[in-house]
Image 1 (spheres, rainbow, N blue to C red):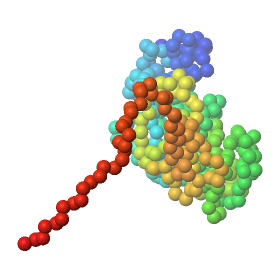
Image 2: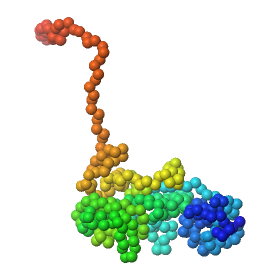
Image 3: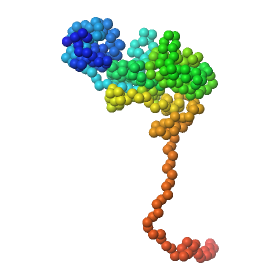
Image 4: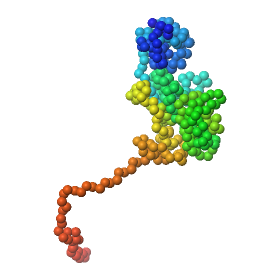
Length: 341
């Protein structure tokens, strides 16, 4: 039975009615067919039907007993939410199909994966951490600016920069009529005419880092996303993909694991903890895992050895020795060597 909004029970902010019915776009997203936005486009194209009736609007709720089809084929039941960390190399576009024929992220993924969508995007020239999931609703939740999921980037930019100039971003900035939220930026030093900058932001609008730095007179020539919420790029090699443990995905869905990852040192951002062309910051190095300081190469310093405590006096009586026990013993003279015949 098709449930129109006027007849359905009031639904919550996530599109789920009190009787268990869900908006059709949400059902398609949870089934791994497409993201909510793409699902709405499929409905507008007349490719989605509910109980044999082609849908003309996404403002319809779907119950457990309803039959939902896409292009005449039943939509599979909802799959368990899964999540992957992918190290996107530069030169790939984050889309399933590109009209210009450029190589895409999804064409380079290994075989055997279910249909996945990206959580956010990285533009053609950007690299680093890209989260992939088979659950469109999960992707939507992590993309919403209202959730404030922190994205951390490392940018190499050409031009003159100072920490005072970067501090202008902490209250937000408007560029060409587009308002960007607060951004934390730290100058990590540089070499020659290029500087390295660490940025933290909670929106992730299209080409946001490049545009706000360009407004400060800096031209970004390399951009690496090092973390997204609690997930880090770490030592994941370019083009490699790794699935997040199901237990962590479950905690993420329950809203218990959205805290950002601990800041990585400037030298621990890519394969084997190195990024070419970077030098450690002159500022004090951040603490590593476990609260220990890190070295200039981003490795944790060894914990200080515990000082040797004075041993408690033994209760056993001391042994007594006869006088002269430590005197060297007298040895006799060595016998003369016999001449050889």
